[in-house]
Length: 142
Image (cartoon, rainbow, N blue to C red; front, top):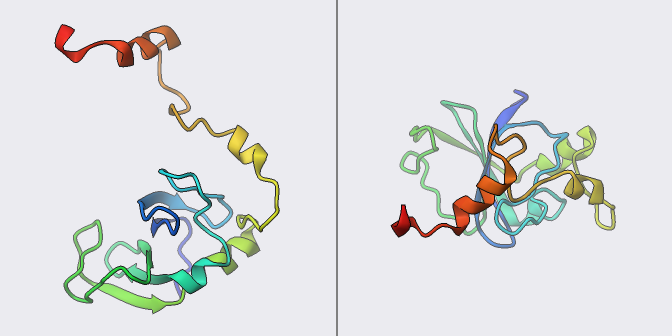
């Protein structure tokens, strides 16, 4: 029904409740919470999350069951209130078919090792010494 790939994905973390916006999500991607670093997609989210789709921008919203949504009143990040309740999400199935599902006991250390949680990949021409000093300076001293 909604086969547009990639798409924007808005997902609440089951562990910490933080809202995660993943732009241009593809089911082959392994995604983690931006706050607690837990995996966002596994078979368990079928029981804990409900899926909605914004009819305006096609963003898929995967929200915790306890999150209150009022169709016609609650808004997507694009501002539209035209949300369609899909129900139980098929995201784990899609991710498994595309190779993006991390199964229990599966070693994903290579994904975590390649991810720099502290800095963006290419931070331009700022060298590490200046970058670190930015955080050491007292803002009142500038």
